[in-house]
Amino acid sequence: MAKPSGKLWTMVNMIDTASNWSGKTVRWLIFPLVFGATYEVIARYAFNAPTIWAYDLSYMLYGSFFMLGAAYALRTKSHIRTDILYNRWSPRTQGWVDAILYLFFFFPGIIFFLIAGWDEAAHSWSIVERSEAGAWRPPIYPFKTVIPVTAFLLLFQGVSELVKSLYAGIKGEWP
Image (cartoon, rainbow, N blue to C red; front, top):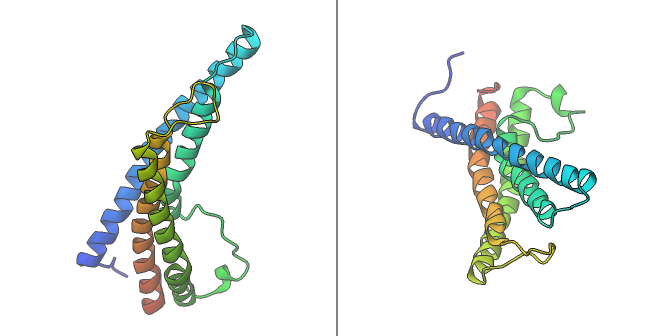
């Protein structure tokens, strides 16, 4: 069958492209993360000179890597899914179940995540918050900004996935 077309599918393709782009951009965070961890191991064990910044760098970069990659993971169907029943269903049933779950569970949770994350990030920026976990007290407000950005990316990818689910529910095949 021909691929769906029209303004709605142009929007879906734009969202999917943005999620692909964000995932492929965020993956580069692995390099400074590995560099920081390697530097810390060498400094600590070869020179007996541990750093005060490696722990903070690690949790901030890993947290950002994990969170900002979530929309890409949703786009590529990389999230964990229990497929005991799902794989046996027809595409129509899969589409309707997915659509209902997106509407009643995914979107309310992500909208709450966006609002709460926005409030937390805005407060963090207003007080120029610094981490209490490390000795050098790095700024933490950029890291807290990752939360609403992640929610925003997930919300938009969720719209794309909802449209695809509705298509499958109505047409009986995945686009």
